Length: 559
Ligand code: GLC
Image (tube, rainbow, N blue to C red; front, side):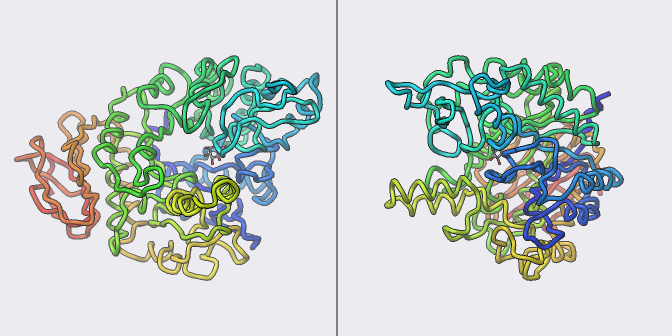
């Protein structure tokens, strides 16, 4: 029986490589996670989404899997995994694994077989085509890879090209082959039997490619329109639902790049029996502080408009609420900007405005203590995307290197991947050895121990927020009403359920802003639930909000 537990769940994402290293090799691992289970329980999360921990040559830090059924030795063993699952479950925390099934590593046995000859039984597990042109030396179409360059790689062994929408070492699986889809369902079932409670499905909306793989002219990612929610996407998801997901009390959340709010219900409405929810990226990509190469201010009215549209989906569609993950730079510099000495207030203001919406909130490791971006030198980037960008600009357009550096300084995926800051010590409490990537020098001030000690700390704030949210049907199901949609400084909304109401107010600026109580709340008793300042007014009313002042009030209830 599927209980849809995710409707009242808060999920915490762990990027295992950067979370906690137990054996001093500088790389986070499963025993490191085990040592932090009490921490997760104290925070009060209901589930953990674990980025990939399967065997992998790490071209893309585990998003290139060479064996779906074994654990990456750097991370530990199957026994460690079982202990971790038992430890999570004993604390009432569920586990969501990352299912990377659009592609494998080129070191996966299926691909080794597939590339060995055109009549190998595994040939059709991947997408092979003859090249174009006189000698067949031009790629089969003009699609570009998400990691720069062409999406095809020539393989001399059989003189054909294979498709890779990501790195060259990440060949795309051919989902049109029913055997591949059966394999994926079996892999899900294998992990369910080991106690896993759900999957975050990596770039899952890319699995069905338009037959004929036509040339494309979309920019900047050529080909996207021929594989984002391709022709058989829905059929494939329903099949996986029937063969695997529906058999367990599970939840699925798909990474849905290229999917707008208009397409979302067709992917996640409960009646469709496909995915339970998706991550859409409209609010993080298009309302960014960063437009092409020029940093700019968040377009708050647009940001609110996009989020409000996702909120307006039917109640049979569950939104996801997130600002950060392992692919996004940190939310504070990105959505707030110049917070100066008000880092804590700004982080709380962002949390209040996001986490009282309808949907499943996701907290990315470090967000609960207000971790920030990091300054990197060219040779300190570790992410394949950053490294490729620097290589390409050095080779083809050295004069533009400054621009690329600027882009990376704001938007590189590396910012989210710096090791978790547990304490002020040399290795930030993350490792006793040499860390696999740079630790943010600000770990001497921003770290878990400090945040937990501080009575006004961000950690305790999140803990209180999660406690309030838990089981609260007004937050879980209430209608969402956006107030002052055009206001460029305030994010204000109400949640309503029958006669009950919540008023959520967040000042997104580092200036004082006048606030007028929305008409629906005037002349009603109110009680403060949570705020970003300790001495925020106990009842709601017209006022001047301080920089990043944010508050939640129950309306119709007196203190
Ligand atoms: C997803 C992952 C990202 C990875 C890519 C290719 O976007 O979140 O980290 O690089 O898929 O697997």
